[in-house]
Length: 384
Ligand SMILES: Cc1cc2nc3c(=O)[nH]c(=O)nc-3n(C[C@H](O)[C@H](O)[C@H](O)COP(=O)(O)OP(=O)(O)OC[C@H]3O[C@@H](n4cnc5c(N)ncnc54)[C@H](O)[C@@H]3O)c2cc1C
Image 1 (cartoon, rainbow, N blue to C red):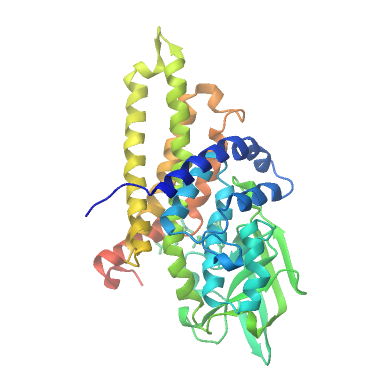
Image 2 (cartoon, protein in one colour):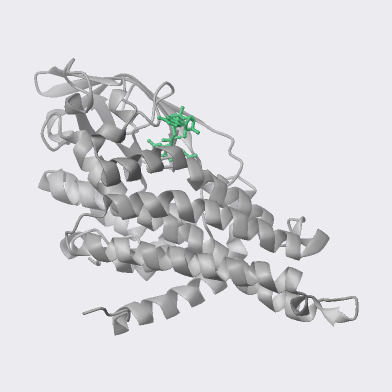
């Protein structure tokens, strides 16, 4: 059976979030881009509409949903404010990780606030010396009785400036490679934690941070899962998160294309509307074709994820394709608005800067292609 219909609940959610994004998120998006304080009011509103609790059990204030539904929400929220989608992806990842691994006390302490948009949790894997090759991370957590001592640095961490806590990946034993990596929930108010902000090209509301941990004491019960299981756990989440990122990028590109279609049907040059020139309508037709293809491949990947089917290859495909496609489409839309498109009065320049970030974040195109090649041809196709 092949069925492409969304459920009635999913259709309702899309309608509700499309209106929410247009009315409440889009008007605020430029303020977030201009910097300043973290947009807590936007996060709280997202909490109220329920998009931060998709992967949090109902007993902790969540609204458990399948992954395709989370993806649809990403797409809709991105139409209003791309940066706000970081809230959904990180609350989903953190929700899944904590629900599966944290003791009840930690779940009670952190999950309700996460679902409500009162609490922000970051996920800290990347380090100054290690990004794509995250399995070689250097952060150390030494076991000392009833606690661990965490030392090291993380870099490029989304929501890192606003977060009250972070899921930090560190090496517990001197075991080389992925096997030695363990995940911890670290309260960022703990002594020994310091952070500084990165000045990004786009998605500035997200406030990426460099975090330093100088002998930070972490209670043993803040270890998430067994020692040495951290890397496999985050990688499992990364597969679906890659699809969520793809849909955020496709949402930003799709709304840009819709706005551009409306514009070229009105704007006139050489005695006709711009839409009547094939030099204008053909790139639009091509963009719509590519967006549709990328969207359905992403839905398919999430559909597989929801059924527990392997989806690593499909997730890697859309993670390199969709951000690049979105950057190309938004760029084309900017150009089709002529000089107005180049100003910050229209949303294209911001959307372009925003989507470029996720050509890198959560894995670059090159790394995704290595994953696809490995899935297609086996590990012997890898250079290492
Ligand atoms: C917007 C954004 C949000 C982010 N959010 C987070 C976050 O929340 N948490 C977190 O932990 N990290 C986060 N990151 C960091 C991100 O995951 C890393 O930047 C990414 O994994 C790449 O690592 P790197 O920057 O160290 O680049 P490097 O690994 O140094 O790579 C540099 C270049 O070399 C290429 N390259 C590397 N290896 C190969 C290879 N084998 N073959 C071909 N080319 C290769 C890469 O594709 C890239 O073009 C974020 C980054 C961005 C931009």
